[in-house]
Image 1 (cartoon, chains in turn brown, orange):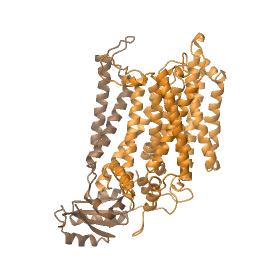
Image 2 (cartoon, rainbow over the protein chains, first blue to last red; image 1 turned 45 degrees about the vertical axis):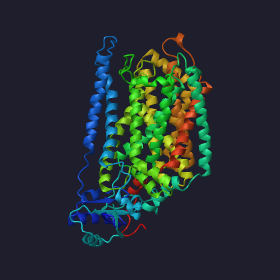
Image 3 (cartoon, rainbow over the protein chains, first blue to last red; image 1 turned 90 degrees about the vertical axis):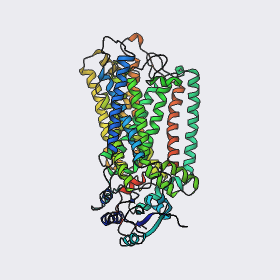
Image 4 (cartoon, each protein chain N blue to C red; image 1 turned 90 degrees about the horizontal axis):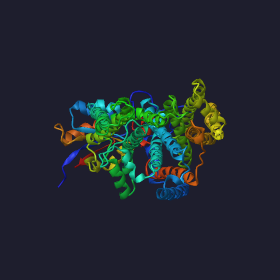
Length: 177
Length: 462
């Protein structure tokens, strides 16, 4: 028995062809699809109408948390938990707290960046159906791939294949799940 | 990173000094860089170099073992010079690390394409330099097994560290710097680890690289997140790297010792850090490109640009030396004036004048285009600057401490053989880690080099 299909994958030789293919596929009404490339291609985001990444908002939240948390810790140490009177100087000597507050801000924002990136990409993901295509290995070298997924309501094995052929790919392969 | 522009002309510079050698495309770049860990194997220079540096690491471990058994008394530090080689080397290593972050973060924000092929190993250099730097304050505590007392945590002694002290700022600055550098380096590695996974020849390497690559498949949606993550990390690392050496300089500037208590210290230290860091990048890049035949990726353009950065930062450092002299005179302060006189003509005068020779005089040869094109000469100049920047920290720390306010408490500082074996030991550790790094990971960022190549023609790149 044949395994259910994940999608149809077309291989291209240049970034321009991939951008063109993604644009046309989006125009045709395909939505459940993804493009794979060995380097970032800005036009692809526009062609596939990928929304802006929400990552910076998480990073901002992480940074604010680090800032308030860092300053709060220093304030709590110096004014509440372990107040030391040094020549009558104020316990909340905030200018002296700035360097560490800055460092904790960057630390938390940076760790949030990594965590958010891993989370948004769904990593770690050791298995993915696209790896079943033998030539997909080249997606990390010099080839460009467009995969239209079977979940897409417009997906029809025969018609989607015909559509992909109009884009003059190097090869079209069926992606098993 | 630069995005591929599908409408404009090829992004790569053409002409006599390209940033990537001629005739390369996505496939050749990938194959050539990935071959170093996957196919080149164990060349003789690697085995010889690794063996020697690993031997030095063993010497380092023996020194540290003796240090832990006997205490910091085996070093030459004592009153009045309580900060000897440990703090000199700490500042030296931290400074070296700064070039890696500068190349990967600041030059990324400035869209400098030539950074692409040197950023990866410069960042690795940052990590290893921070690791070496970390050793010194840790062992200088005398009881390194209690070094965690530096961190604020609830404890049975009900005591907390002093947040008004620059030494605690240092703990946070250096540990944040180390952590964020590691995150930045790892995020930059992910797409290349996927390349290594896909090119691996056997199952074990495939699984190992595959686990590290987290399942990266070059999806457009992932690149979308990835690009903004890199940019955000670069944006954070830029002020971070400036803050780290600023805080290191506060260790001195916040103190009242003549020669330390100066407002010029933060910018002067940051410029010095970048100066020594670029010198170390050149010291490493020149043999690397020669041994692994990477002249196509680390071109004369890179060497030329790095020489120019050294020239610029070297002049800032020279201005710092001049200002120190000027302020000593202009302040009218007896102790500041004596400090400067003692620094230049006292018992450590030789160190001051060698530092001026190494950091200010000799690097001026880089004004000449011919000199910048002479690779062996550039290599020698980079070594000279490394030594010069080490002498700078020696001069700042030792000459200020050994004769401060009271002549009755003057003294001399002599490093012992353990000071030297620990210093040479960290150099061995640093180089040994670099050997391991170039053997296991792509030393040049493959996907970033792809982005600066000319776009392939239709149907090409087979």
